[in-house]
Each structure stands twice: as structure tokens, then as C-alpha cells.
Length: 265
Image (cartoon, rainbow, N blue to C red; front, side, top):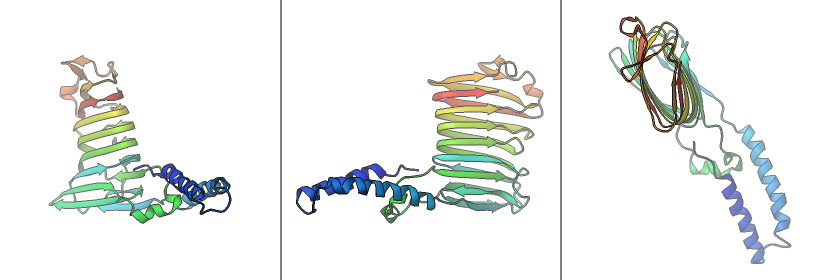
């Protein structure tokens, strides 16, 4: 979410006061107006901004017999949490602060869902000072159904992201992280999972559940990559569980790091 132009507008307003004073349109000194106006202006922005803070909205997508689903999350700045626990008749459900738009397509027993941020405010939104201070961005708390086979694609900006996929049947995961911090817990009982995690200026922690084997390949441009080699010894230019080829539950993990740190344990 873009930063609201609060201080530039304040400077323009007070510059206008000084100009009117120099042109003789104001009685007395402009400084006699500036400081009281500044206090009133900031006070109203803080008070009314608190009152006008967006409330979370509950939303959901029905399961409707889907055996598999591809879900895309296009999330901006803010907080994103995803985990299991949706009601049996819902593919997904959750609370969304900052707005959400849904696109749903169904093809047989497969459902395609895209969740993206709400539309940008209209120009008249910024007429009111309490909307100039900005906010915490989008805050999404999403629960997914643990039964369908899932393909998840996530694109995040400057976000705090928490993904607990341990109870979900995720066959494929693609995660593109702009900045911020991410904690990802991979599926525990999904059979074979293919995961790709690409990060920019981000701190990433990836947890492979006990009983899940992993094959890990990663490249980091400037940051650091720290893999628990007691569980995943070096092998074939990467890291791999000794029982990877025979494990019932396993993950193939490809990492692409920019500036930041990535930890796999």
C-alpha cells in the first residue's frame, strides 16, 4: 500500500498561508495561524484516523466438490497468515483488512482462485485528513481446507508472512517475497511437494517437519544461506536427506535469495 502524502500536504498548506500573508490577504502574522493550525491538523488526523481504521472483512470460497485447487495470493505490504482449518464446505475462509478481490474459475473438480488486494481509494478519499496518515497495509488471515490437493502461488511485497502448511496437501508451492520476514512450515503429510522460494531483501525461515525428507538447492546473491546439515547433509551440489529417495513424504526445495538471510531447518 502506498504511503499517504501527509507531510507534503502539510507543507503545501502552510506555504500557502505564508504566501497569503505576504500578499496581505491575512490579518496579522501568518505564524499566528501556523502553529495552532498544525496542532489542530495533526490532532484531527490522529483522532479521526483511529476512528476510521478499516475493519476486517470475513470472506470465503466454497469447496463445491473440488478435489484439487490452484490458489494465487497477490498481497502487498502488511501481514499475511495462511494455515489449515477451514470449515469442511469451504475451500478457503478468512478475515481481510485492507480489502480483497476474488477471481474464481471452476473446471470439473479443479478450482482456480486468485486473491488480490482491493482497489486503490478514489481521489476524494484523500480530501479527509485522517486518511492521509496511511495504515498498516493489508492484513490477511486465511484458513485453507486440508483435503484437496493444492497448488499455492504467493506474491508478497514488504510483508510479515507466516505460512503453516503442515496440515495441508500442497503438491506445489511458489513463493515470491519482496521484503520483510517470512516463516514457512512445509507440509507434513502431503507425499511429494515441489517448492520454490525466491526472496529479495528478506529474512526467510523454512521449517521441514519431522519425518519429511528434503532435497535442497539454493543460490544466494548477497545474503546468507544456512541449512541444518545434520538433517540435510551436502550432496550433489546441494543438501539432501539420506533417505530422500525412499521417503513417503518428501519435498524438493529450490531457493533463490537476494539480500537477506535464509535458514532451513
